[in-house]
Amino acid sequence: MSGLVSYGGDPRVVAAREEIERITASLALVQKRLLDELHPMAQLNGLVHHIQLDLKLPETFVRIGLQRHGCYVAVENYFTVDARVAHRLDSLAQIVQENKWISNAIPKEAWIALGAATVAAGFTNSNLTAQVVRVGASQLPLREINRVGGLLPAERVWVNAEPARIESPPKTIAALAHRLNNRSGHIRIEGYETSSGRVLFMYLPGTSNWLPFGSGKAFDLKSNLELIGGEESSNSSRAAHAALSAYGARPQDRIVLVGYSQGGLLAASIAEQNSNVVGLVTIGAPVATSQLPANLPTLSIEHSNDVVPALAGETNPLTKNWVTASRHIDIEIGETVLKAHDISSYSETAGLVDRSNDAGIARIREEILGQLKGARALGVREFQPLKAVS
Image (cartoon, rainbow, N blue to C red; front, side, top):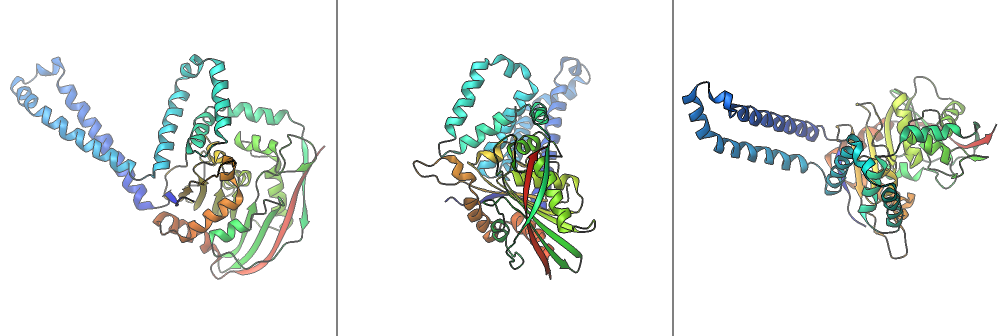
């Protein structure tokens, strides 16, 4: 297994990057202003002055160019190799988005071939797979995807209480990942009493039903389509709110959300709408475009060759309260890249997050787990999220 790399979560780095970008922009303006002085009409004003200026300009331009290049190198070095490649691909995707003639000029057959190649690449052990998916996903018609979800039959959603195994309060990120019940598909809620009041830790699993309609689990394909399309009231989101109500959540309770795959996307959606959310951990989830509160401590764990996080179409932003931890998953002959999305692989990565001394990871990790400082367990419950055609 490859080592852990990360970016974000360190205010010093974010501030330094913003300052470097500001200086780069200022240097560009200086260059433009000096170029304006070379305009023939400008030369007519103060001939001696412009002769002196013309003698100095070549050396000045070289110096400014070197400064801008140094700024560019410094900014790039704030990202890991994987993140830099992904951000360059994001730029490519943005170019395609802003210039529709490019996609219109490409024959439909070529797009189909690209899709087929992407699917085929899914069975290879390559970061390129996820990066190609990221560019392709940036072109997804999200509004139309949302409409497709709306055409499917309306469904009734409810939760059944299930026996829950009581464990000691989590002290590590790996312990949070361990509590995700993806095999059973249950939502788990743990309550704790602290000096600052009650805090609830809510664990949201991944997709457990890939059928677009019919009876089964609420974390279904329809919910995936709705969440990716920006819909707030998906089957899974209604199940999550039903679980909170059944647990007895209070308006003043603080909430920490931990979600895997669709559960991570749902957790980010809830965090966007609920000011009571004080911590967010997403695992293998496409959350890059989520509009999270700027002050929300967020930890995203992603594998660089996992295609699911790439479905967001972008890479996670570099901010002081959002840290992204990633690594490449080695895949043996005969295995598919889907191994990179396996919860067991992510559990191992969570252990690496706990052992990391990266400033951004350490800061966000402590802010999230610090919600349990001096906590006394109140109770734990699990809920089976169900649905049926009404």
